[in-house]
Length: 114
Length: 114
Picture 1 (cartoon, each protein chain N blue to C red):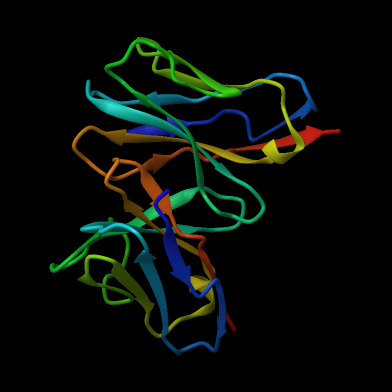
Picture 2: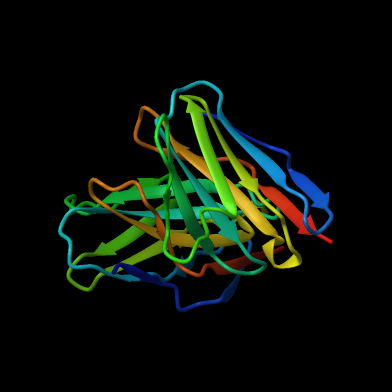
């Protein structure tokens, strides 16, 4: 069974600083996708970034980038120039290729301080 | 972008009553939708996969007679919590896959059973 582990229950960062959230996963599959979702206090789930396992290049979306280490099964999220609006729960998620089921980690609560 | 509408956003009901939650894809057709449950300060747990025109597929440990899912059209899936009890109180979220392969989430429904 696939599992997703987020080892940091809570993190905080100063506004404009950079923060990295950790995620590791376990799978025997070679074709899969990894995601980071943001859940602000409104509880709306928002896709932050997505990575296809077959792509070696790390995905980036504006201030958000990932460090995808396939051999280590690691998928960390870096948020640059943190903004107050980045305060939220961040969930790392995995889906096997050909499946639409998402497996979520337990989440990291990120607080951006002014 | 694709929008998934979920209604109601919150509901309070008496123990023993049934509650129906709707999930609609507003600008795309979704043959498959997903229902998740999220307890306070926890991650999202997949309950079931809703398939248009056929029976839903439930995850292990989820009672199909308790959580009735109907996916009668390509834009609507409903989750009915039957004979609700206080332990069913939770945040329920649906999701649907858009044509661009991205997964979009509804805004969630907070159910409180008294």
